[in-house]
Image (cartoon, rainbow over all chains, first blue to last red; front, top):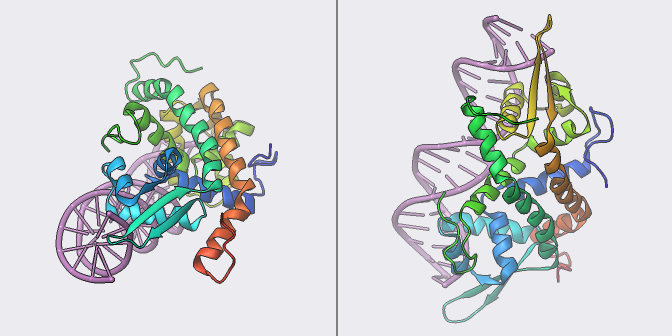
Length: 132
Length: 132
DNA sequence: CTGCATCCGATGCGATACTG
DNA sequence: CAGTATCGCATCGGATGCAG
């Protein structure tokens, strides 16, 4: 696979890297991935997400959804009913993101204990490091 | 941050989600992944990384490395030579992170055009959306 | 119900200067 | 060489109030 570097440590990171960084930034923000996963289960309306996330502010949920919509991961469908009804859903691109993100989430859960142990040992060296 | 799910859409994750979020946060910050990839190529000293990253401030490089070290992904080895010499390297845990991160980077590069197209269409709807 | 506007504190990151 | 200390700005995210 194409790596981020190219053998040289002082690498030529160009457009590839910029794209990667943008994705990583998106993945790193507090709610985007969670929203993607939620919408991966099933489409949902604004307040469904709001309740499911429990802690997100309305302002941030809006901007998160706008960002995902802007990047072409999520579709926004407005039904002009009496009280407005808006449904958000993952499109094909958004669903394709689910796989690599799950891989990362899987890694996180698999190695949670190790990371926590490392943190404990780092702040309290009386613990056995057991790191390499 | 509090509980993420209330059993409605997410089922019952708590600790799992926290672990995932922390990893995602790490992955999302500006330099951590880059450092991991660089160290994945080969161990390096402080200023090697500094030069390779070209743009990072030493303050941030330091805190990035501390964070990775703290989480048990990177080892820091000091050789008490005349001018101090410190080598950073990925340990087994850090190397294991390389795979899922690469998957994500791969996704980013594969779908870069789509995302850029979506952004263009979003800010200028005169373009053909072509999104599903 | 959905979403925008405003305020505001917390945090991230870069620039610079200084030290063992 | 490998950091630490201090600053300043920009962005993120939460709270609240108003509107279509």
